[in-house]
Length: 433
Ligand code: ACO
Image (cartoon, rainbow, N blue to C red; front, side, top):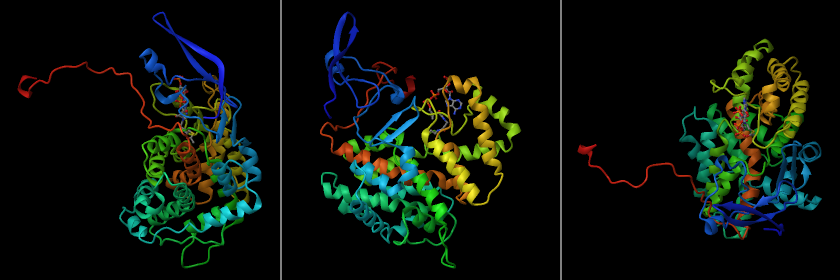
């Protein structure tokens, strides 16, 4: 850990006995109380389901100021990166800590571009799935199976192997996502093309067919690149923490990233973009918004406004702002006027932000609120929304995984519990129960 210790301590008093706990000052964000020795000293655990107040690691990659609605990658604001940079440059920044020089970027792009094909034998692996499998199910399986295909990059103690695994995952994830899609629609797999950039190549692998030429619209590839950029990393979110926890046991990188994909799939996390578009389409017309807002507020109804709320942001998610602007641009450029879903989304946002329930709880649109509208306009089926999120987030998972393995304090993740079950009791034979 970088030296962030202060002379400040926090004092915890239990049954008249005081314990001094060291404190750390981060470069940004709240101060941190170090409780690592608490159990050894005081014999107590701390209780924090959902890690709402617990820093599980130290990191130098991404910082979120939830109150200001600010997201920084290595210090650079996401709106500046989304506006001026592009996905592979952001990947380099996240992985290596600094923006690349022209030469460094050229080499990096070259490496990623030349790792995009997957082992030919893996095609058979895809064919083992049912055609109606959700592409996320296919991705969890195929990415996990990479451990069985790339033995030369599974040794986590070898820096070069770690590097190769990082490049392979970033490069091959779009190929795997596109193949999962092609398989689900019964079309032939399309091989990657080295003359296209990262986003254009992904669109080509998704939408080209052997029967005719498919030219990628540069406007769409720019929008796709921006979606990847906006999803690139988000500090210690659920899927990233899953990757770190899986990795803490020494598991290989492909197994760890497969675990991250599995976690991302849930509707409270990456699955929200699909759930959000489904919700907007179900609402259908602006006059039905009050009915859905009432349901979202009703504690007896499990319905939640999808694409709204965030554990960390208690202000606008800065990614949602860029995404909203992108939705307008893409629909405009595609000549889609008066898109009813976009109208419902904008009106829903307006009404929710005027409503005390959402204002009091600081619930704002998150990144998923507008992304589905853009992806639908690009002709992606809803089932592909979360796989696209996974493609963009891969670099974040990998950067955090790499950082963790380089941390001398890295140890197996093993939370404690507040046990509320039976105390010790004797086994009772079945005839006596
Ligand atoms: N609709 C209605 N009410 C909500 C919503 C919502 N979307 N989100 C939170 N609330 C309410 C809760 O009911 C709770 O109310 P209460 O205090 O009266 O009990 C309060 O706001 C706080 O909510 P929590 O669930 O405690 O907040 P938490 O930080 O645990 O949850 C989460 C964050 C999971 C993102 C939540 O806001 C949610 O379910 N949102 C919808 C799903 C979604 O869009 N997920 C994407 C997240 S971003 C991402 O992964 C890319």
